[in-house]
Image 1 (cartoon, rainbow, N blue to C red):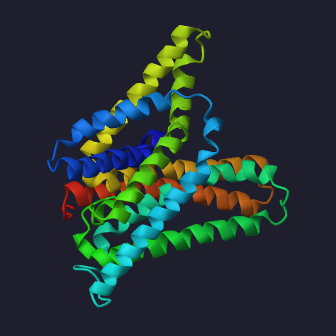
Image 2 (cartoon, rainbow, N blue to C red; image 1 turned 90 degrees about the vertical axis):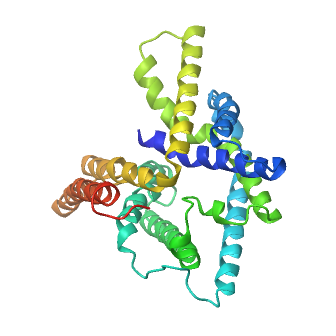
Image 3 (tube, rainbow, N blue to C red; image 1 turned 135 degrees about the horizontal axis):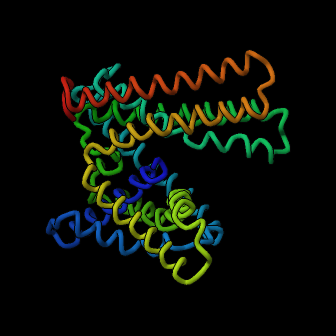
Length: 309
């Protein structure tokens, strides 16, 4: 389920970018669901690809596209702050109580790759220094996430209405158009990998007892197409609360992947001391309690006494 939700950002960005560019060309606004159909027609066949290694050369381009988009956003946001005489955007708060818990829930998603740490450590030639490398990598990721998010929030304050900050930028500016197109190309390259784990989980449960055959092959293609169709329409439909949807998925399911699974694996494989095992059990309990509390708070803010956004 979590890997399914992870595909939402790519699908909705691709769809919204198509709509943005075509609206500029046609000078007429068409329902986003038509562009969702185009997104499905483009990405569904890509999801049929079994051998994702053929895209490895494109990952260098993908990294460049992400960097270009990051620099573009930072430049525009910095210019916006300068135009505001270095003042914060309307409604900016040093501590935003309303969205704090949503931020915490989304942070679980940011570290969803943690279960890969043990296999990477096992394959590493620097096992003795691996802990320092891991801390440095996580610290770098944390600093980049915080600085980028704080800069964007400082610039826009509560006027930021788009869950994807790239869509807050002037859509007719050439640099923004180029950044969006490059990022869409990156999605074309990366989507088979993005949806790969989701497809593998579904197909393992549905087809593991089925003999290899053309029927099995095309049934897999059918399920992959259904994944793209449903994920695209859901992502587009919940776009304006997408951050909360992903946040809830992150805290409910991401906590299991980020904290519970690594703790269980560590207990099973290498936790020899009582201190290590107690720490692992503490993380497991913390993840469960955190998932319950944060889910209740977010749902209360959205449907109970909190303000809507």
